[in-house]
Length: 324
Image (cartoon, rainbow, N blue to C red; front, side, top):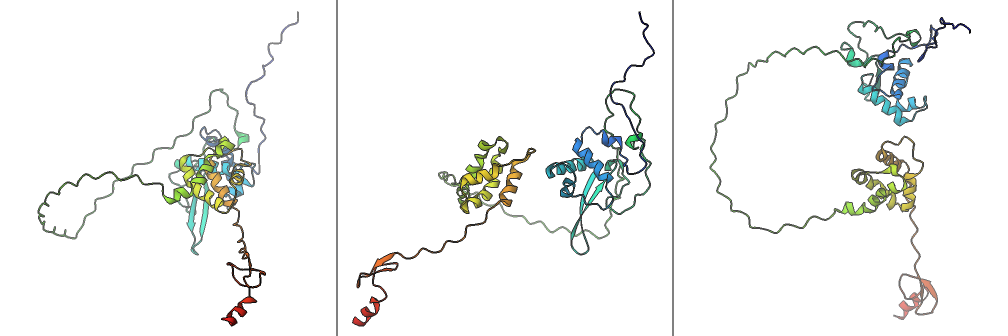
């Protein structure tokens, strides 16, 4: 019987790191962001992309969506996530010439953990911050030795208490109060006679005008269950559909334009339909020329001629005037 080799190490299970040390073109990212439990993977990837871009780069929603295989809706949703957790701030400033400029600030740590950070861009912090132990390049992070769950998200430290403001003293003398005048009580009013309740008001003219558009929007869920709209959304979108119908667009054509080629990540159908109703609005039809006058038979020579009413033609009218 062959002897067993007890010195052979068993194959490890789980993650194995095969890292190469980076010397150029790398970005330092903290584990609090890479292992954040409340941020989606798209939001974490967007935060990593923003940290890797140089200062002054264009980071609008359209510019970011052009660089990654994500839609503008998902990029906008990821930016809102980063803003909610303190990794991103978007500001709008008015320039001296009156124009509005957008400023985007990307924090490598949540803003709540840096009470000394300036509230506006361009202002230097009061003191440099020591780097966190976990903020090292991903290639230099040692492999974890335990198989337990990842560490929880760091909680922001409590903000220092605000000192009470000193009481303000006024040196001006208080104005004298005006004299109080007594008003005699008014006599009791006789109760109003019982009047029959008024009829409930009918629908306003605008509601009757948009009734066909509201019914069309309610039928959209029959074409696609993802286009289920609330009553409030239908009342808000009905005026835009009415414009289509008043431009003599057939209701079936409106349904086809609104329900065709829906995106896979449709999360807000009301906003999507409002965008289509405004961007795909067809132009009004050109004005038709007026219809010509009908043919009439002349009472004098029995010749046909065009006129709005029966009578005599142009050749017979001068003779009629001379006979008179």
